[in-house]
Amino acid sequence: MPDRNLLSQTGLVVVAAGNGRRFGARKQFVPLAGRPLLAWCLEAFDQLADLGERIVVLPEGAESEPEWLSIAARLHHPVRVVAGGAERADSVRAGIEALGPGCLYAAVHDGARPLVDAAWLLPCVERLASDVTLGAVIVGRSSTDTLKHFDPDSGLITGTADRTRLARAETPQVCRCGALIKALALPGSSRLTDEGQVLENAGWKTALHLIDARNPKVTLPEDIAIAEALLRRREACS
Image 1 (tube, rainbow, N blue to C red):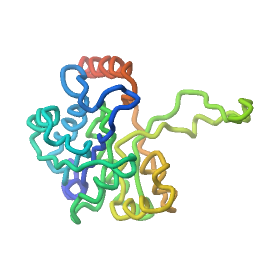
Image 2 (image 1 turned 45 degrees about the vertical axis):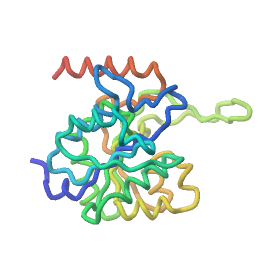
Image 3 (image 1 turned 45 degrees about the horizontal axis):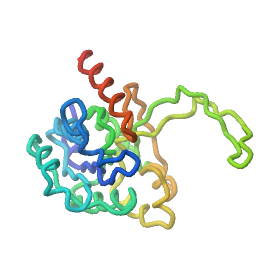
Image 4 (image 1 turned 180 degrees about the vertical axis):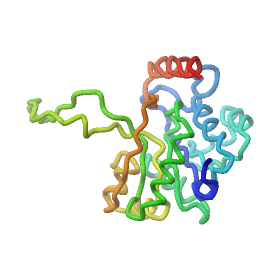
């Protein structure tokens, strides 16, 4: 059974404040298998009745737009909207700072990862709560690719990474709220690419929760077809 106390101390921050420059549209509202992409993320976590506060970070003004209102109307648990910033780190900070003092932990999730499974959340929170030296526990998948180090100037390969020790960092990433807020205030934090790296930069240890399921991020228009295929396969297997 889920630890209701731990989940109630965990706030959810879904970051969906992008303007869709690479995608060509605001992808959080693009249709995916009959529902807006962002709806898949929020409805997955909506199954967790004991989860604490729920925040979604959207572009400024989007909270009054029909696309968002239609998503919110389907949810059983209220989600508060805050406006995002210029960079992803600014949006994460806005979401974390909007959580109340009862949230010791924050699960930060990319709103462009629609195949998230809410069952991944509790093991991350439990690991984080049991080890005070950890700043975050992040979801990730083992690498199946052979990855090369190379010189960007010459293009020459300088080595081959040991893929048994590599993982693709994904989300959700469960962090200590206070530690993440302080880490995001450090110089250079805005150029770092995920919350685990932000906390590592501040001197915290982080841990990995390995998953087997595909949890891709929708970045380009062709990624929609991939996500739809994975959703159909998941529903066929359930």
